[in-house]
Length: 124
Image (cartoon, rainbow, N blue to C red; front, side, top):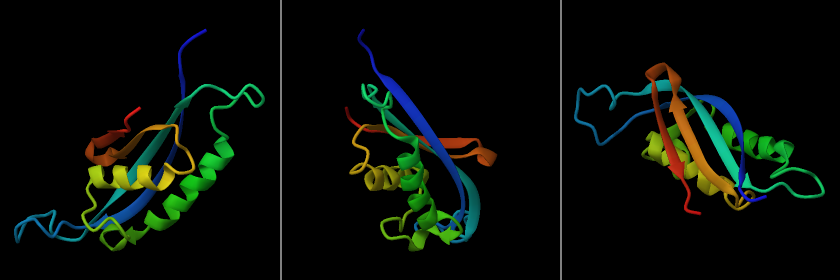
């Protein structure tokens, strides 16, 4: 049988940010916050011994570490996120997780209350 499989693990966090590059008076320049949802997908074939692409427990532990760095923080002050757009948050998360999970295929960061999301697809 040929093909591939994908597992997805998600978490949420609350954080504030602002965009210094916006003009004075623009709402995005002012400090404001969002509720974020993050989904991380790992692609591969199940290990014959475990039946898993990746251990969800290990994925959860890694995501908890990411969440600890973002949740209830000012994102502009997080190392590497001085310009915390959805796009840059997705890249930042994928970069942090890639060494432990080389099968990451995409990271989606969304703000459900705004009906906005960004998906960063890693090259295969």
